[in-house]
Length: 256
Image (tube, rainbow, N blue to C red):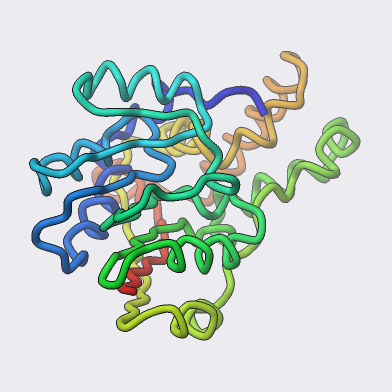
């Protein structure tokens, strides 16, 4: 895929940051000294970590140059590093590994979560949030249209860029042997957006990218037109004309 767009992602900064706030509120460490924001994006989640632990060394890592550029502009006093978590090793004595909406993109992420918990000191925390929305209309329709002509050939091996998340019990069995405490829960958000077109703008910054990036400009325009039309039929306006974007997310807080 092309690089992530920080500007597109931040069109819905308040809504996208809310899960980070909810995850952060459940981390039971009062005085962290070393904190890492895995998949820090444009720094909106990193900013929360800095405010929670102002005396800590807070580092953000991400694979996207554009996201890191935005993060450095936002928080010039913090350290941001270009790194892929699949090959990254936490610094010694790290108290908190925070990962908001990143591990759904990481292959074999259960093994990666086990590895990262294993690298923490006793009492360290791995806090993770992942979208669990592949069965929502936003993503069902992406896949439906990808199977149509003229998109099928280009999108046949790209339309399933993410796997469905395992059940909570799978995470529990995989992670509990590494933990003294393990919390797993789902939250379903209902984000209030102006209309169905705003839903399209939302997913353009994340889940829609693997579907439109491989297409040439005329095909992309055709795909987006068909997707927008189908999405408008699925997200019916409320009495005031707004639409509700239903968005399930999975949360994990693991204390070593």
